[in-house]
Figure 1 (cartoon, rainbow, N blue to C red):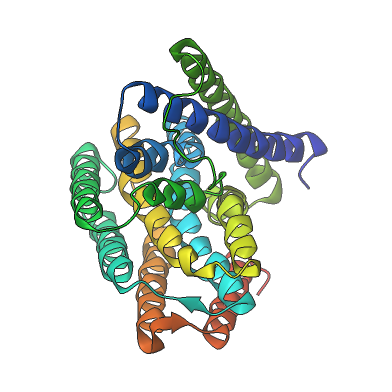
Figure 2 (cartoon, rainbow, N blue to C red):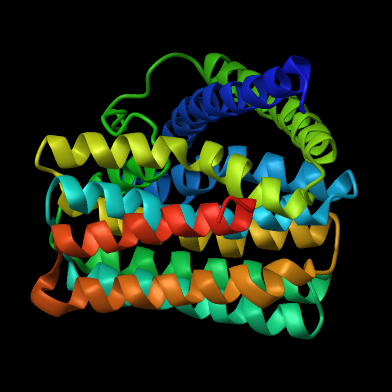
Length: 330
């Protein structure tokens, strides 16, 4: 059985990652404001990348520590949790309206990225060539999204709100007309957030590896379940609250965007930092399931122009079955 110390390390690491990510995003936004970046760029780049930092820290540090199953399991497991658990819970509370533009752009890119990961798992693994392709794909996605946002006759500051909400951070942390605080304060916030993230990632990886060893299960299983659920908790809380408030229409776009960052950004940086092969279990089952879940969500969302409660229930039950099967309980 895992010790209380190991459980404490894992939980403490998750808490530090969430707090550090929030602090780092606030600092990054203030720096971006000082540099006169537009709200669009702040939302699509600064916040989108910044809010992925907790998952990034966990995966990169796991890969550097020689635990590729934990690193890749976190990426794939987080996407499965986002699609089945987060969207399922939100749609079960309130049917989710669909923005067709986001569905095709973000859903299509996410599905393509999932398929690219499957191809990589059977060929090169997550090496630096694949990582470079993933990061180029992220750049092209951001550029395309930026161009569409720029041409759309909408309030572009909403891009910030969507990016912040996609990872569970304060969606009302809207960029200000006049920058708040000094550049020194902004840099200090960013640095403190970064320190918390690095420390939290170290604690989480150490705790997760110890728990996997004590339970006699693979690190991939821990990454796919415990770590993935933990790093997806902000998205779950935010989506459920949005559904309760009758704002569940934003949840689909948030989840699809978050999954793209998980695959292209975190996968790319992890591969650049510590190239590794995909664990056999993830190649044979979890990666195909992640791609299938992305396709099913797109089909559900397209039919009827929304995710219904029945469809949300199907997604949620599927996630319960998946975690039970993966953890050996079923």
